[in-house]
Image 1: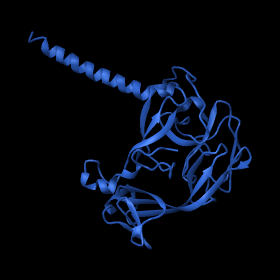
Image 2 (image 1 turned 180 degrees about the horizontal axis):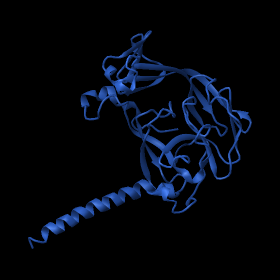
Image 3 (image 1 turned 90 degrees about the horizontal axis):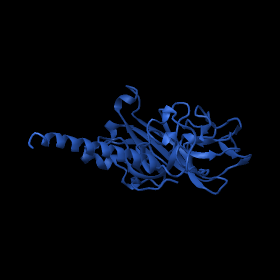
Length: 293
């Protein structure tokens, strides 16, 4: 009996690991899958360092919903439903199938999309944008996390911006990068001013966008007509998003992975997670559990 016990223990250990991985794969494929936000293309809705959950059942399933989707085992979707303009969606980049992108759905098959002088037109009608307000994106070297960055009457320190010794009344995002990501003798603090607007899509969906100006490279485009079985996406950070206006192009419907629903964790890369004494500078507690709209 003593000779069989180690074999049984190894078998139980193997079964536990195997079934645990299998359950995780099934759960991620059919229900909820976590993603992290690596770029600022969806600012102000999503910040770099946000961790989100995506519902996989929202639009049905394609081969990309499962591991090894790039093997082209089958085409099309099952249990399919149509996404709505304004949804924030994760999809597989049709140009590079190793990349997952997250953008906002702007056009469905048959729609025409154009940007003229920074203004979005859908089916020939200018989309309303209202309530302009200040927005700041700050990119700092990690060595400044406890020291701060100063500009005029504004101080950026840790996770907060202060103006005249009071909390900023405008919206912002702060990201920390390694010191060697900045020029050796350059400024280790980059502050980008933008304008935040509320955009109102034709179906009544309201969401925030930011624009640095209305005269950037993607602020004037040709007219795009969305073909059948394809979708047109744009980032909410309109001047800093590679999306359907640029190299991504039209996205096949089967490349859709799911709808972004809510944040479960968010940080600004100021320090390693184990450095708990830096959590006040690093973790964006106010974004935990925030819905995505």
